[in-house]
Amino acid sequence: MLKKRLARSISLVLAGFTLTPAVHAQMEGEDSLLIRVTEGQSAEAARLSAAAVQSEPAQRLSGSASVSLSRMGGRGLDPVIRGQNEERVDVLLDGMRVEGACPSRMDPPTSRLSTSLAPVLEVRTSNRTLRWGPIAGGQVVATTAAPEFADDNLTTGHLTLGGADNGDGKLMNGSVAVGSKASYLRMAAGYDEANDYEDGDGNKVRSSYENSEGRVDAAWTADNGLYIKGLVSRQEERDVKFPGRGMDAPKTDTDLYRLEIGAPVAEGGWSLMAW
Image (tube, rainbow, N blue to C red; front, top):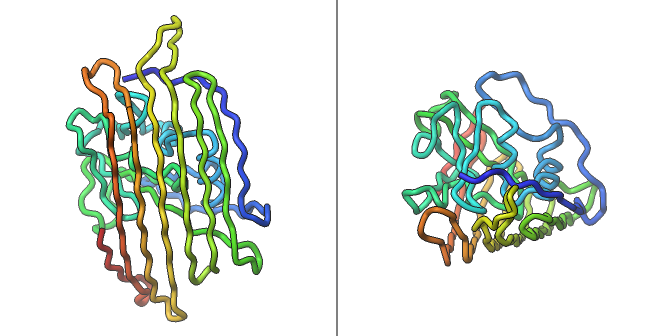
């Protein structure tokens, strides 16, 4: 487990080609079983501002008293929810249950979260629905917000640039979307890297990495509420170093495909998803 880096971050966020940021507040009902981390902003604004200063979306969970984070190297934050971790904590990415490949937790499921489109994060510590099965320790639910089109605009997008002085970290990501509230097509990409950083004694700590991601998602909604959503994404990690493990990860590629169809029924709805 590594100490958290101390870094100064510089970021620039352009939310929408119209340069009109989303300012409406997101009202949430009180629920002791649900912790929503949106930093007091709308879902759209939260995911953009969070991506501007953090290369890993899971970092925002550290603001909850019930959640702590650990990791083996420069990437891959592993959540611990109320003392429960590893297989007792499920990670759902837009409804997809994702897993890591390494039994030593060098690539926990949270390392698959998108860095090009920072998701809205929820932490569930008790069963509220049977949809995702029983909750042993907790669930981290990451939901990527749909693009918001201001007024009658048919395009929107964002651009993020960031950096850190310790480890010479660099981050950039962006997206562009065309369409409307009923249907859209969005393309997004991101890249971040860092070198080994120095601890308080000036010693180099093996933590360098390179991470890149590209994704395309689309959605269509009929007048009666029937919807179809699709996602294709690829993440490539290169030369990820891990101190004290006796091994590194020179190459890790992750491909995700998702197709979902659903419709409202009475006061609820149904959906069928394959990934």
